Image 1 (cartoon, helix red, strand yellow):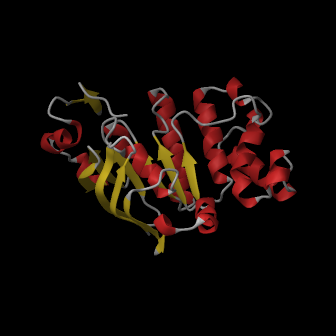
Image 2 (tube, one colour):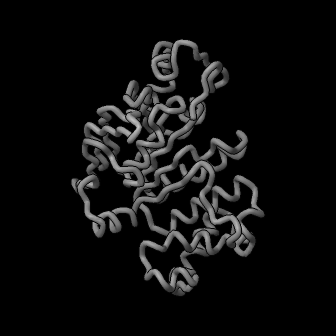
Image 3 (cartoon, one colour):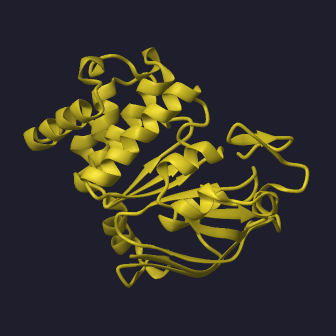
Length: 262
């Protein structure tokens, strides 16, 4: 179980990104995180693996405190937490297979990995990850030759190289068209259901959240203003919707009119 307790993040310029945020995530859940741009979604995900250092509060995973872990402990913890980014975060001039192999950096010695020298076991794992994502035929292309959807699948394959128990997906389909968005989220849903990987995923639109999430939290100005099950979010009232997105927001086909989440 992942437990976030009274998490607060204040940036150096005084911006309060998270305010006393508390929630828990059971193993195997697909947690959707919704809210406007600046609501704290990205900060929350990055605090969980300490890409961003929290100002206050606790993050407990299987009763281990991530927030107080030293460098060696944090390295061990991060091995099991995969991260997927909105803009893919690939080395664009490198090959797909080398990008995927980068997911093993937390397990390998630095110098061999810098020279792209990985064990046969790691190489076989990379091939399986590419097969799982349906992009085996792209293995030796440069990452910048691929479409957006293919690049995001490379990002997921890279995360799988960590053999993760949790995947943090920060707006993974924000730059993709609706058809590709469903395809990528379908891949994450399959990993969640078949491999029991816990997924925390920030998303723009309610139709995606309703389709893929097993539970949802809504953030506004760094605070949790909504916490509901899959069934509850499918019955979300206009008042609850406006509590998350503001009075000016209107529902339009599962998305928003007048306010777009980011």
